Image (cartoon, rainbow, N blue to C red):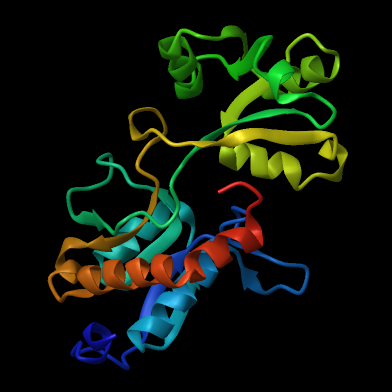
Length: 236
């Protein structure tokens, strides 16, 4: 980790901004502690960069302004890597890649799950993905709760959803009758590049962005990123 040890800001606190109302990425647990995927990722990054970690909360709408003003070094708040943000913002490499999954009932076979109608959100990228694949019969829903009801009634055989939605379903004991079919599907053309850490372009000039990307690469290599994701997400 010579890259971390030789950085001129080693030892200086690294200040992350977040907004802690988006479990499982950032939230407060029953003890009032700030926890979640993003919080653990931030602390691990600070360990690798040999810098004390400070995580401060701001309303989500204010985070980029605080970053632009220089009050934050970086923002980690389940941000999709996107060109829709200000041109002053640069993103790290993704630490969590968006994916989609098929959800069916636990007692359904894989063959059954993909042989009937597939439920999908109307107007979503997931719907377009299945249309473009040209191998599924679709039933579209404005509300995925309706899809869950019809899955249990046997009117559809599976639901194709974002993995974040599936993780939320699996965290609810009422959905213990559900399971995943196959592996998560990743295609940035439909589901995006993933979630990244935002920095201002001014901050990126002092090599912080490069060091964060190198630390994320090390986290992937040493398994610590996967351990963090597995701690909070059933599907990742």
